[in-house]
Length: 230
Ligand code: DX5
Ligand code: ZN
Image (cartoon, rainbow, N blue to C red; front, side, top):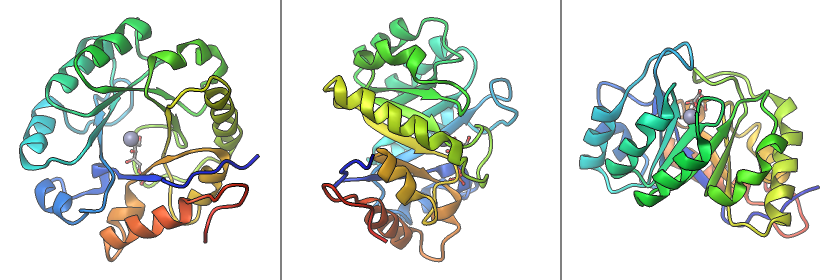
């Protein structure tokens, strides 16, 4: 089934930006709906990126919506700190959380939107009862840890089932996809029901990153009863 999506959000991942000059990378993409920031601790995933001090530094140079994606152990301890640092959205992996309901409520109490992430092999059904506690569900469309990986088509049925669960519960939850999202794959994600799209290498690997954001947004727009625009 195809889902109408007239206002897709494109969220470039800074993982593919210039780590020696993040401010300049951010200034290259004024049309981004959010800046997606990947925090990795070399424990939950086999890679190490950045943490709270860098997010605090980014906060000082931009008013953009900060979408923090925590790929770390102990999100129960760390996630609230990112909300306190002024991030608009903080996403934790449910597989890493000790108490996901308590953690979701704590993040919300600090004024940020709550995101909950599922790895490709993690089913949504086990967490359906938690949907009322969150503002965004992130479905990983690659194994988390690295940019530039190939999109996993096997995640599409889960995106569709998740959109059905959200719709039937009457909830206003963003459904985000992350990993391998590009002009080749974004339409499939949109038709399956995603409305928030993380793209790292597709955006920062483009000749004009800002133009790529707008072209991805057009491609992801699914009209009522129709299919995504090419
Ligand atoms: C991967 C990260 C992604 C990554 C996506 O674990 O969560 O946000 O930056 O990169 P691309 O879009 O290149 O697959
Ligand atoms: Zn990410």
